[in-house]
Image: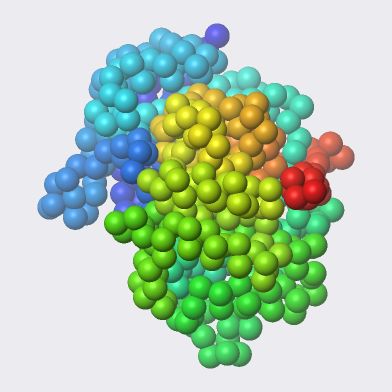
Length: 433
Ligand code: PGA
Ligand code: ZN
């Protein structure tokens, strides 16, 4: 047992220059650790509430001083003396103190900051790396990353409706080799874009965001870049899309406002995906292929394509155990995206991962588009052992921090380190068979 003695919070900036919270937890024996909270842009409606000040005199209302005060007064009083090793009891106390179903009173940013900072402090106190303290001491599976190399949608000012075009180096023998393959492909994509006269400026998650003309052009360019880097698409490196279609859904239809201005019914949207997969068998996962409120669309999509690719639920499940369980009953998706700040505590996040495991669903740990140099999700991904993570491209310091953390973990584990590329690949080949 190790008692929580003190909580401090600081209003810092995230990678978009918007305020967010850093929370430092100090234990009675003086050990302390800090966690920094991320922030999304294309958020699901049912996410836990990120508390902002709404004081237009500061940061256009985006300040987080109220959340900071909650950490240092009410939360501090409640958790003082609790056992830092009992994460479940701490997180339960935080949820009960908040008293709302979506952490709207104290703020999911305040609550997650405390939950994570205490978890980190207890890891130091136990003398364990964070991944070993979070999972178990034999955790050794380094996930296959999904690198977001081309951006559109709400993350870029261009003519691409879909938010993320990602590559995953599943064929690499080791994590570090996979990272190299992705970084080389990213550089190759840069020269492909440059030769075609496109901009090589990057978007929020570090992917390029050129003025492309259609939703298919990014796929073509990424395939060309993989070839030119000397890798085989569909074998060494596979493609993943996050079109974030909740952002396109209006009055029951999908509206492609940024590209061809077309409107599609849910059936037409599913047909669109089917044709795209026929054309590009290198695509092995689509996240939010239909919108969070399109339950019928999700069921149809899962029936039609659930035996071909990973269908990952982000905006619809919002890392919420209750919502996720209901979605599984409804026959929706076959994988879940896991974002700590969508739900606001570590315990509920781990519960979602366990539900995925128990139901044969995939689970992909994820960053947010607004990030910091905090690397907790890298350790969480190793602890979870589910074999996949998305945390941006191979550019921008806040994304690289996570990828570099895996390099450290790989080195620390030495001969015990395993890379998930081959196992996740085989698993999804088996789904297809
Ligand atoms: P967000 O988007 O972090 O801006 O919400 C990421 C995603 O949709 O996966
Ligand atoms: Zn998403």
